[in-house]
Length: 248
Image (cartoon, rainbow, N blue to C red; front, side, top):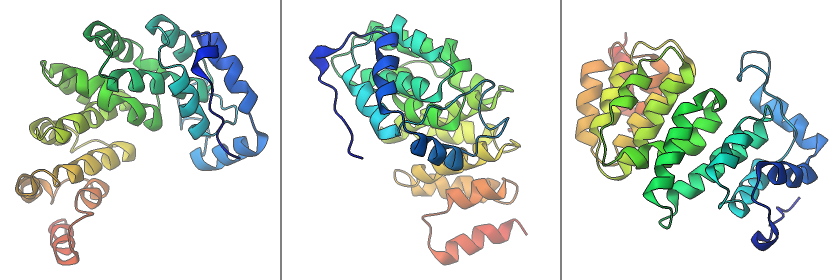
């Protein structure tokens, strides 16, 4: 089914209006796909999560139409137990944070909303959809202490935010935060953190391959195997075998 674009001029920019309009795209067939994809047994997502069965592409189109939603209404949308509603909320946050016309005051409010309501941003896809620009972009010219605090949190999604947020720094050629946070996550026990840390380490190789190699020479033998595999995914076969061999 083709995505339906929503005319922006017809929109009441409230959480209630977003929820009402999104419900028109609910599909039981899509709901079945979502359950298969996300494997939504208890514990895979935050407590009380629900799914309604709307394609993520349609959620993103709706978010674009609601890009001017006030921060107070975005928070109301985050309050919903329905995953697609919260995916819409973080997508609106992302679109606003990327927009050059967004004021510094609004970007600060978006960042504070993300941090203060992280309890509602409680799955890998919600973090990955928004952390780069809502958190990383905002902190680029500011102290990054909060990322190191999040990296040491008991909350897995806090830790994922810490590493994913550094993707904006990598884009700008600043690799130090990624390596620093990845080092804090070397002993993490969660597979979703191993994948994220390894993936973002891999990204550093596009900007500073020698620094990635130095990190691997120091940590490959002891880092989680999944993290290592993700980090060396773009290396050639002999290099991958070398680093994997260090773990033996």
